[in-house]
Image 1: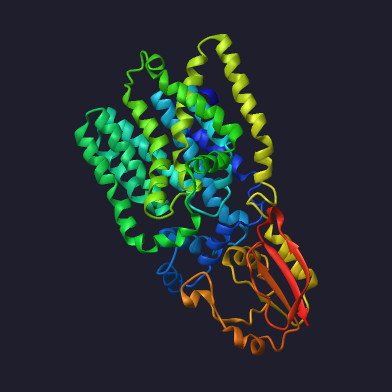
Image 2: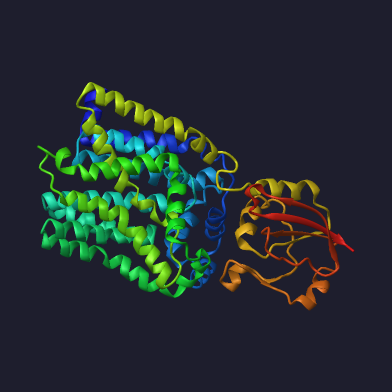
Length: 467
């Protein structure tokens, strides 16, 4: 009976989604809060008026997500609870990937696609991150599945579903809206001009959001302009080369052998256009925009393109399973991928899974804190993660004159240098939280006594006494 239930398309998608959700829950609270996650936490705790003020200056594109987390965290601000929506989005993405693979290939391809996706490092990393990237992956995949089905058999209800998904997509992440361009190319390659118009209509919500947030594009200028090789390395590294290289090779082989794999399926070479454009164009366009206009390239912005290599790779593997020798070869390849990814899967669920362990620095402060200690933390990227673990301490920040939420940015307004002695007159020690390699001046009259550096050299903590 169970086998009969999961043999259908809906049963398979539901099974993949449920199993993926369980996998995403394993160790979901194990890693310390990350830098971007801490920004999500801090923003979600603001009053609505303060949140609106901050979004007017920065991170407007994440506004819907912060608003959602504002409501979600009324229940709890535990890390595992704040990450739970991302785990849900990752599970929906896995179900959608399996569903699209089954639709374009067969049931075996559906199972394999789901498996390949959840084994990747980036899938589990963003399934356990307090950011909306997993939902961008989910919505882009579901929208593509809906669009492919529309090209095969137009239906009014499915058209409405597609437009709804495209409306929601830029609310998860703006750049995922580029999938509408993939749909446009796919429709044109099939000479489905009416559906090409639908794809053009689907891009409008993303264009509207792009116009609204365009004034804040400079806030990601710190991303810099990577060389083409560095951009590729960043994307491959995000997924782990042990996973990405073999899966990408399988996907490339699948696209090259598409005519042979599609014999008897009724599929056209337009499917090659679909996956090739979904795979190659988004990173290329982001890099070109970074090189010519302003820095916008970051590997995490491309998470929604993962199905572009996972599904063709699964299709090739399923095609090899016709013969007994092929089934053995597929079992070896898949088992090898799983084994190779075990260390990375374990590490991402550990305390340093989000690159460093701010809780260790917070614990240092808690264990050595004196009655007249002050905190100086000029960089929000390291301040917010440590602040999350100091919520029960309330360490004063006397150099802050206007809190960040009142300024409307992530960084507060601080006193002028000449006024620092007066502000610190009643404090005997200062904790300085900074980034290694960046010059952060100790307040006048204080000398460093002891220093600590976080794992991966992300943050430095200095305890300074009066001297």
